[in-house]
Length: 550
Image (cartoon, rainbow, N blue to C red):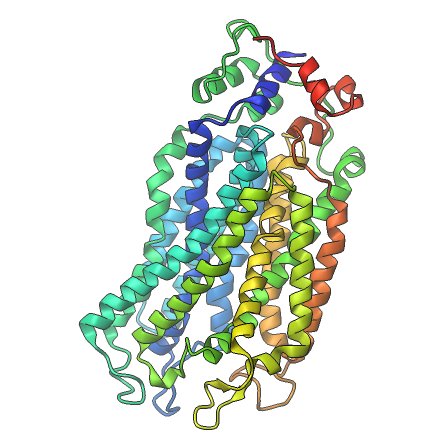
């Protein structure tokens, strides 16, 4: 075995240590911030409408126009797509460590700037908010390929899946954290201002001080990122990048020996180790050799993530009906602006607590037991099933508008309605939402790993844009006059759910394009082992035969 192979083999068999958990926290806090920043905007969107788009002649609380709402909610997703491609490529060209701090610094600065969006008119505030949230999205996007790649390259092969899943699982905590911050801040302002409901006093229901609420919520996204910035900057480059891409075995051994307490004495002479990584093919991303060896895998990773995010981000289609049906969200007229922020945030926090967060951490517990491929198939299967049920039972479960209060729904089966909604989120997260993040970080050669993960993730964000906004328009009522104000007619909820069922089923079948990666070394999966190792069967006896002497 070459020096690089000895180093990487040692990493694969290294015991789980404190530095592994430290890396999970450092990378995971980035994802906490990612989710906080992406999802906290939904807790204050209605407040923005009341503050900047109230029309006294309408007799209704202000709401964001469809184009403004799409921009405010979607511009960060567009930035994320750009960041995934850009920083994924930079992670391979310049090294993971060199650009890892850039993404966090960008998130810190743009989170603060989003809260300070300037201007007095609605157009000025929304324009500056969208500008800063686009660049916030670029930073968030960069975190996807870099965090996944760094964690996969630090981890041992036995627990690699759980470690990568734990990093991504912090996204659930970020969603919960964003909703909790909105609850706390809106409660503090409600207690201090005691504003009446809209029906009692239209003007006083939205006090000018409420403008600080959304700004504080958005700006607080900088805090968790700032906590780990120093530690990101102090992280060494991953041994796999140093040995296989930079081809510096000596530095790889020294770095890993320092942070993982792996003793390379007797394995490689770190004082005289010559440069040179594992001998392997040098084909590029657009070469025939890459297409032959990894083309189907990249297609599988990109397509499943694209299809998953269409379904995942479209679940806001029936969120309003769910919350209204079970009484979590009364009619807007009956609430003040701050009470509405509180109730929307509370509903989002409860859904995250009972379905989103558990789904992530069940995956962490089982991903190295039953495998990524199986979990992804299970998730897509149940998401397809639940969407089919919604296609034919949605209105039966929801009920019909109450005669005395059309904003509420009477009849139906609200318990089953809420349970179905929660289970859809659970199996998205105990399923493809996590595994589509893990698998691209394991399949590809080190020199292309970050780029390929970025391409897969960007495909997902393209799906998110389709799901969040394409289906928002598609799900509008087919009958003119019954659609939401400002929207054109669509294909209706029933047809939308039927289409989403087909999309989930397509994700199920596209999963056959990706292999199971559980328990295998990154070099074996990517084909970076030498010819003799690639011909040998991958089993424990082979690993024992090539184990490092103690």
